[in-house]
Length: 157
Ligand code: HEC
Image 1: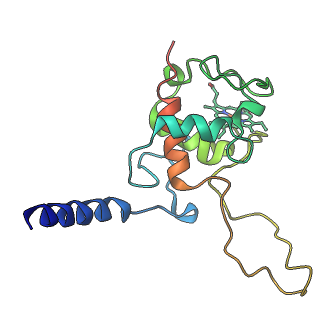
Image 2: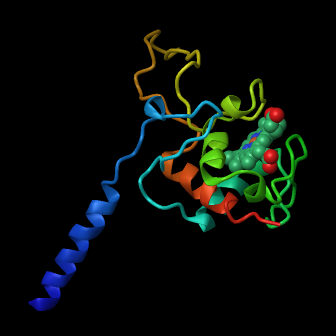
């Protein structure tokens, strides 16, 4: 009986964590240099998942443009600068801003905006000729951005 109660309490506790506020991409507050001070998901980032997001083609695929000595991805690009030592150059808020929308920190950058869903011209549903009905999505979720930022914060030289 006591065990059940403890388990129930633990489940309520984790529910509260899951319900942490996610900031929608339209509501993100950037400072004038492009930094985002507050977490986008309200949940601490997981650097191990950040590696997965950065290395996976279907997710961030950051290694297509960036070289990171710490990562084992076989093919790493040099379109962007190496991210080795990124945490020495940028603080967490700056890294979050760069990953969410690099174009604020680096105007005209070719780096994709991973947490932005406005400003795209969107094709309708060609089959029916109606506007696309599903929700607009960002390239990465709020939690994936936090996971990437948590990993980038470990890249010190
Ligand atoms: C299409 C290529 C491309 C992709 C994909 C890309 N970036 Fe970039 N990134 C760039 C370029 C180019 C710059 C240099 C800034 C500029 O455009 O002037 C940059 C700059 C950066 C910087 C600052 C670099 C420094 O150390 O000073 C960080 C951090 C960064 N990117 C992280 C990421 C992460 C994390 C991802 C994946 C979620 C990613 N980038 C995906 C092209 C890319």
